[in-house]
Amino acid sequence: MAELSDSAQDADKKLKQLKTYLKSLGSVAVAFSGGVDSTFLLRVAKDVLDDNVIAITAKSHSFPKREFEETKLFCEKMGVRQFICKFDELSVDGFCQNPPNRCYLCKRELYKRIIEIAKKQGIPYIAEGSNMDDTGDYRPGMAAVVESGIRSPLQEAGLYKEEIRELSKELGLTTWEKPSFACLSSRFAYGEPITAEKLAMVERAEQLLFDRGFSQARVRIHDRTARIEVLPGKLENLVRKDIREEIVTKLKSYGFTYVSMDLEGYRTGSMNEMLKRQ
Image (cartoon, rainbow, N blue to C red):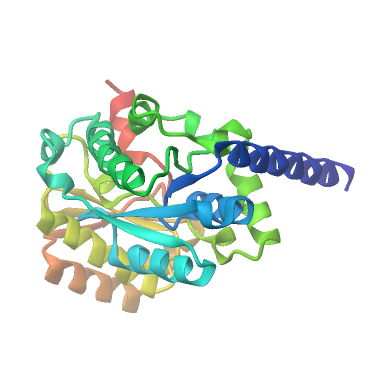
């Protein structure tokens, strides 16, 4: 019990550091996606800065409609002014070719637009929700964050994902147990061309899985093949006759030719595994 108590105290200490850091900014625009981290960051920023915080949410092909609508509801509930940044990532030079630095190309252009919106509102600082766990794996998008001068308050406070979840729970945020999410473009194998059609296929396929109780799932796309990842404990559910037949039938109607299951199950950054073998 002492160890748990120490962990809780450590998280609370980091929360105080986060509040102090945000207060020092005076006003801030939070790049808000509705995920665990950006929701927590926006809530704390609102508590500290009140009306001196705004939320800026990107509306793009790679951001599911479900997630977008959730951001609007949260901002309405919290009384936070939300600005929508309409962004066509498919028009970004090089993006559709899906190179390993795709995320960098996208975020570099997206942050330019977010900075413009913040400036028009008289907000000098933009903050995003990367935490200490985001310093691992292959994350080229972080280079765009640094180059653009975007602040990462959760990293400044030394907060890890599990601490953010626990603190979110204490704050009464329903996102404390929300599954991890990344943009739909991350479902494409590097070198696999990204199109609006295929992004829509992935979105519909993942929504079907969520609706069937697979809260943490990915549909990776390889040409016209869907590679489904669910938590290892849910693999048996996926191959249950009624579920399997429905998923295969519907995914084929969405445009997939083949539907497969990844026996390793869900894991973050599985598309980066091919880079590690090179």
